[in-house]
Amino acid sequence: MPKVPKRRHSHHLIEEDERRAFVQAVNECGPDFNSYRTVCVYKMKAMWNKAFREHQQKSPACEGKLSCDLEKEEKRGFSSRQTLICTSCSYKSDKYSLYEELETGKPGRKPSKLDKAVHVGLSQTPIASSSMSKIILSGNMQAPAASSLQRRANKVLKNIVDVNKMDLRKRKNEIIEINRLRGKEDPNTISVQMDGMYNNPLYSGVGRTPFQLATQTVHTTAENINKQTIIY
Ligand SMILES: [Zn+2]
Image 1 (tube, rainbow, N blue to C red):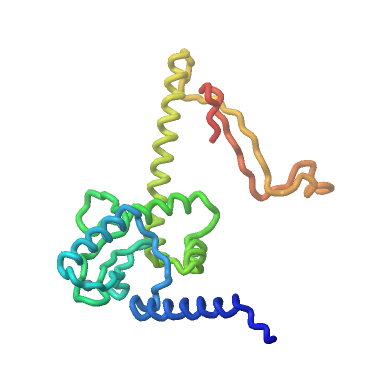
Image 2 (cartoon, helix red, strand yellow; image 1 turned 90 degrees about the vertical axis):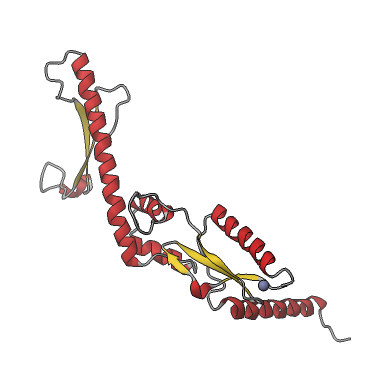
């Protein structure tokens, strides 16, 4: 008796179905049909709900499906602006921004909150924006152009430096105030304890110098006035 496993047969059917769905998706949405986008959930929800209602009102008898018009897509950093079209009738939705906008108080296009927020994370990790792009693009996700990443990074990094300076100034003034209340002669003198660390191992200077060799040194400073002992 010939052995034709049933599972193999059904497996082939599934593959055929998948292949057909793939071809249909390419025809309807273009070659980008299986790429990924970053969308803000509530913005996406609003877009689909409004478009479904509009489509039904405009063409009540239409059985067509709504799809993203990727040819008309406007890329905005990690996110995009999308238009929905019907595969059967002539329905076309408004263009929707699928990201939250950042209020700048200036005229012109408002940047995406997401694009700015990502740079805060990037500034606290050892990878460069080019590495981040590589990771994102290898996942078939949309990444901002290198030039726009650099432009945004310059702005965000300056903001981070400004915020840190402001914070340090505030802390310094608090310490000076504590010193003043304690009746210290010179309230501007802040007592600290420090610990240093070199980039070369301790034994690297053996036989050459009684001290430790180093080309770089890092110091951690903790002030001794505040109860919280803030470390810098
Ligand atoms: Zn339609």
